[in-house]
Length: 164
Image (cartoon, rainbow, N blue to C red):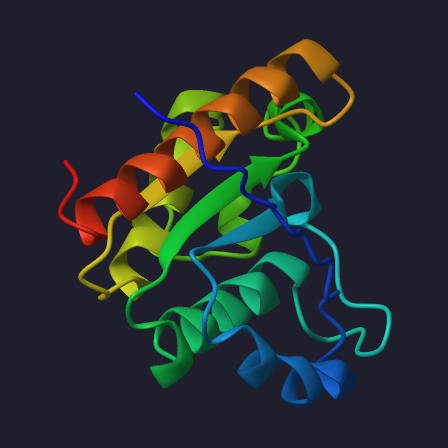
């Protein structure tokens, strides 16, 4: 067994519309993309456009990235963040307000499964899509998820190089 020192670089590129074209092509050699969605914002609009739903916008950005020629060999890791807030809000604010096609109950499990399906439908890449429900303020859970993500990236790299 051997150990290769490997640097993991994480870049927060933000999501403002005006900034996207500036960064997308810089990451064409990335091993993985971690896409974070604040699922609790399903009933809110963008700051720069008060007509566009934040979660709908996140879906559109996810679709753009997932279908980009720059990321055809890149693993995608999707974090549904703020799950704690989402779990509280879904009981009082219907998901169907943002997604009229959602006809399920106002329950966390059903709503999460619907959102997973919405994002998964957009991901037509040959690499696997990994989805994690997170609460960034739960540091133990976030550490476990990041350990899992790093392990996934290592496994994918070993497969790509024929070592696994």
